[in-house]
Length: 213
Image 1: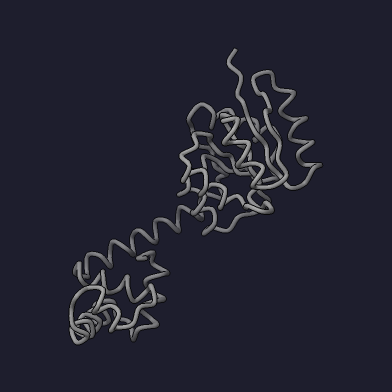
Image 2: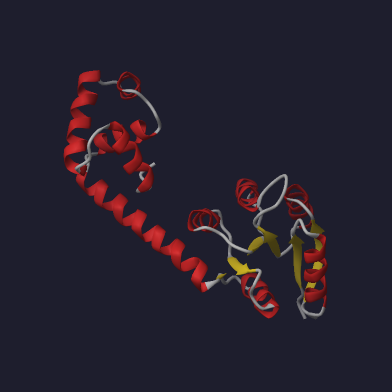
């Protein structure tokens, strides 16, 4: 029987004890590491390369989202199941984009966590239905808005919009794009007309809300 090698990470020792007790009762799962903070968890994943990391999102030193980002940078193959009491749509979306394979709420039955670890280890994704629904709606809304904006704006207008949202002034945008400041103003006028917004700050807000930057 092939055993699933897992690491567990939570900043509460009693939760770690509970997780260890839960998984040690499963013949096909082996705990190879337990960590109390994100830095310890990252080091364990780098050294031991477990199949699955069960990770509390809110961790000291390196939180779950930051740890996921580091794992992606280092191209670590360990798959991650997030364990959390709550997670807002934006952070869940970020975790999803950073490669998390599943999420289980702490209020869920323990058997659901065991099931999720097995599914993720086998290459599946497993998400709490209510938790993922909001994030997926957010993804869809942003993609639709970005697609709508992209279809209205020219490539140059999209470049100008991105630079405005990054905080650059007209003169800086002109220098970056090697055009005149008057041309930047011309493009901005066209962008305001097409998106039906009034002014620079409205454009910055719109761009960020709609995921254009």
